[in-house]
Image (cartoon, rainbow, N blue to C red):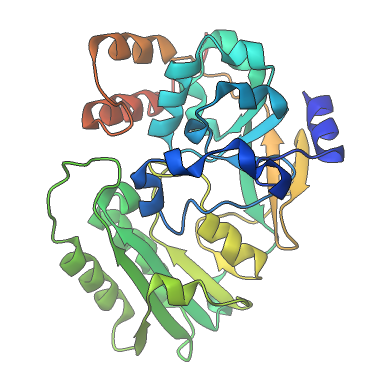
Length: 316
C-alpha cells in the first residue's frame, strides 16, 4: 500500500484540481452540505481530500487511486452500504479516521488505511495573542454543554492582554430535517461568557472570520466534538495553513508511519494501517435491511452508527 501512496504523491490526481471539476455536478449536492459552512469547503492536497458520499457517478472512483475521506461517520456508513459490491471493482485506496474501522467489512480491509492530522507546533494557549472561540450551535457539532465547558476550561491559561473573538453560528441539525427548535443560542453563549469572565470580547460573523489571512500567534478553540458532521474540517485547514494553532489537533509526534504528507508549512497528514478491530458491518447491513428511507438524515440510523463505532472489541 505504501507503493500506492508513493505513486499517488509523485503523480497527484485529485477531484479538486481545476482540470477535474467537471466530473462532479455540484447542483446535485444536498442542501445540508452547505449548512456545514465553513467545515465542508473544498481544498486540495496530493491524497485527494473529498466527501465521497457526494460522488453520484461511481465511474469516477476508478479514475483516482487515493481518496482521503472527509465524510462524517454517518455519511461514510451510508457510502459503504450503497457501494459494498462496487468498491472492490474500483481498486481505490481510501484513507479514513481510525474510529471508522469497525464499519469496514472484512472483505474490503485491503482498500482502507487510516489517517490523522497533526500540527508542527504544540497548540499552547499561553503563547496566543488572540483566541477565537468557534462553533455551530447544534448538538451534532458540540456534543453537549459539559463538553463545551471542558474545552473552555483552557481559557484560564490565557495571557491577560490576549484578545478574545467569538464566532457562534446558529444552526439546526443539518442531518435531521425534523429537528426541533432549541435554546442553544442562549445557553452556549452563556457558557462562553462565564468562562471568559470580565475580559472584553469581540463577537464575529463567520464570513468576517474567514476574511483573515494571517493567524500567527492565534489559537482556535473549536467546540467541535467527534466526527458526526465531518472528520476533516476545512476551517482547521484554513487556520493551520495560515500559521495558527488549533486546540483539537495534536503536535506532530514524529513516530514512524506509512507516509507523512505536508499539507502546508504548518501541518501534516499521517497514514497508518487499519487497526485490528472486529468489523461491525454485518450489524449495520442487518439494520439497513430492516429500515427504509434516507439513512443520512435518519436519527435511527445515526444512533446505530454511533453505537457501532463506540465498540472497542479487538479482532479475535
